[in-house]
Every structure is written in structure tokens, then in C-alpha cells.
Image (tube, rainbow, N blue to C red; front, side):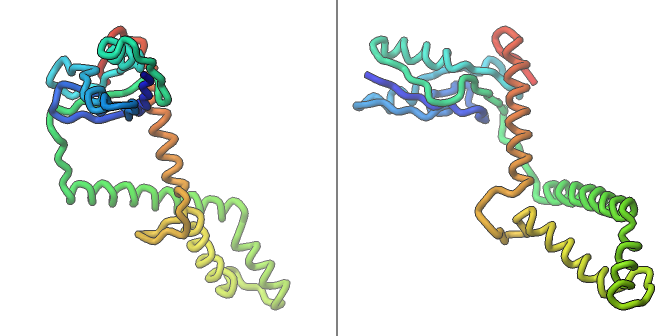
Amino acid sequence: MDIYIKPVEKVQIVQKRDVLLRDVSEVFVGGQTKGEAEKLVVFQIPSDRKKTYLLSVIDLITVLNEKYPDATINNVGEMDILIEYLPKAEKKTKLWTVAKVAFVSLILFIGAATTIMCFHTDVQLPLIFQNIYYIFFGENREMPALLSIPYSIGLGLGIIIFFNHFSKISLTEDPTPIEIEMTTYEKETNASVIDFLGRRKGGGET
């Protein structure tokens, strides 16, 4: 009998102390044994506090071999699984979420505006507009509206198109640059936690 498992990189377990195979991995088993295999306990949370534990795919294979000694176990997923245990579900108030979003948005807006202004000052954009306007119209104007207004509109539209997401409207189904960066950050964070816990015998806490 062949058993295929596909462990995930990170799971969150709330309240319950027994971690089942189906909580950390997809399971494919021929015949009628899939339901039993999915319900196997692969890890027990030792304490009722918020912790992150490291579970190896070897632990999953060991439990399955004890139940099905004649089976061939095939791993097609992750080699290590992070288990984040929460004693109770975290309550998130809408007001707190809105406040955090507003604060982060304000910081990003100020940072982006400062960066754009510094860039424009560095490349002397007003002087460039003045020279372009003089070339085409023969007049000297410090900041001609004919150029600055379309440029400002184009800058805003360019940012929206680049990030590919504005409110609930999405130009394409591709992930946005922010989503890609968040995914990269999450993967690097998980890899660091796995490396840290892997150095501590028997897992650990973050």
C-alpha cells in the first residue's frame, strides 16, 4: 500500500492539544484507510500556552509506519512543519484593524511622498519642465501647468497600474508587488523560525 502525504509549511492550532495528521498534511491513501490515517495523532501540545513548535516529516512517517508497517510512505510536500498553538482564538476588533491600516497607510504615504520629492529635487525636475516648455513655446515659466498637471496625473495612474490593485478593483489576476513581497517575507520568516527551532532539541518557543 502506498501512502502519499503533502505537509504544509505552517499551521495554526487553536485550543485543541492533539494535532492530527489532517491538520498538518494532505493525505492520499488507496482503499478505505484514508479516513483512519487522517485521524492519527502526530503531535501533542505539551503546555497550554502560546508557542510555536517544529514538527519534522520524519515524525509523520514514524506515526504512519507504526499504524501501517507494510505501507510505503511518500512525501510530496514540506520537510518541516511549523505548528503555532493558540490557547484560544484571538479576537480582532474592527476598530483596531482600521486603526492599524490607517497608521500604516499614513506612514507609507509620508515615506513615498518624501521619496518622490527628494527624487524630483535631485534630478531638478522643475528646471527640466521649464526647459521643455521653453523649447516648445519660447517662454520661461518656473513650473508650467501644461506639463506639471499631466505629469502628476500620470504619476498617480502609473503607481496604481504598477501595484495592480486599487480598492476592490484588480486589473489582472496576477499577484500585486505587495503580495509578492509579503509572500517572500513570510517564507523567509518561516525559514528562519525553522532554522532556529531546529537548533533547539525537541523544538522550542518563539
